[in-house]
Length: 284
Image: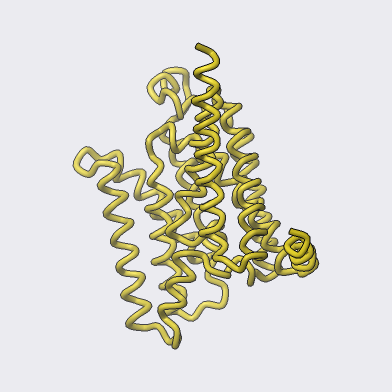
């Protein structure tokens, strides 16, 4: 145990680990804020769909040989988030069908482009790193860290400023419309913010595991708490704690960062599920 703590203390002195912790905390915090809204609106898989879109955008950036792919990936993901919302409101294409269509299509096109135009000698490694995060969180530049900080502050500010309207749209869109809240506009805002979070989280857990980062903390908090505010606060605390724990375990045990974080999230979910059941029995 002492050796493990010494190893962790040693790694904490390295800038790349410090960058990973900063970005991990910010991404997990942002993803947890809207995770509760997505779960309650039964739109959890939008994160999965947009993460596959981001993978396709990364493939395009790779083909174009862009040194900084985040602006392109962010733009494409936001556009697809808007299209996803619009097609989901179309009676001919239901929400789940549009998510599946865009998700599978982007994933297939992205992989096809990387196979045809990719110049890397390790295509399997590049795809695995993009899909599962691998060690990309440990190779962040200072510019990427600052960009993540700025975008995270914007996401948190949007959530805080429009908290009441997001709350209204989450629980009853019809009532929100009747009281003067433009629900379509705020649904669009939610979709755009989620797109930003997806792009940020790509470096942390990879495109295939992003949904877990968004959903698990919210579901865990819902096992114990009932009010929207308490669930959101608990979800944020759990998300940050799980990310910190996952990153440190990953560094110390040399395991994949994204998979380790999600594994910690799963353990915490079962712990909170047990706590929720025990508390409900004690109330009876």
